[in-house]
Image (cartoon, rainbow, N blue to C red; front, side, top):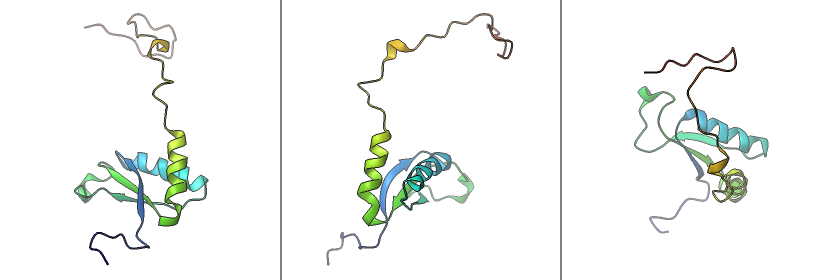
Length: 106
């Protein structure tokens, strides 16, 4: 057995999240597809004082890794389809909706 060989039952990382909330969202997507998953703190950031802050790894059983990656990749935005020109620039001024917060210029 090689020192670097992964044990058969060890969970496989399929996603990286920047915080606990993002990791739980990914976990919910996988759960809807019937894939069990677990969130764990990223190595080097296992400090309980961080609470929900800090990076997380989303791991699944080895047999579900390929399917989980396919599901998550299908949700990723295609950078070729993103049109920056479609986004309207913000123009400061008077709020048009009474529910908007007022704008205070510097």
